[in-house]
Length: 137
Image (cartoon, rainbow, N blue to C red; front, side, top):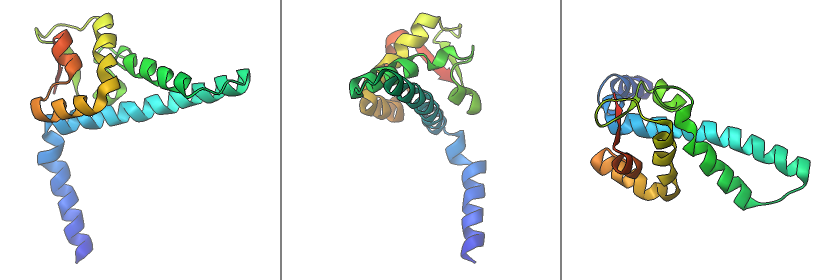
């Protein structure tokens, strides 16, 4: 009986409500991008540290910030996470975002707790507000 109820709850979760909520889709796309960035970044970090015998946590942090800032350059629509969640990055005027703005809007990831809070409350990140961009469904 519990298995049936659990399955019904998952079906309801997937078919209605949460997945159609724009905030959830954006957060989910950020999580996808985060894991991809972590995998690539840590791979590069381990190769560099083992090859050149360098041990630096700062190097890892800087590498992650750089990679996360470049994530929207992957495709015209934005990052892999945005594509998976069927989201698209554009300006407030519904034009294509320039590559420099794609990079700059992601630099605010350094203060991610504030970014997450603003995303939940206003459906906009600091980078979106500063560079007049938006994420479309």
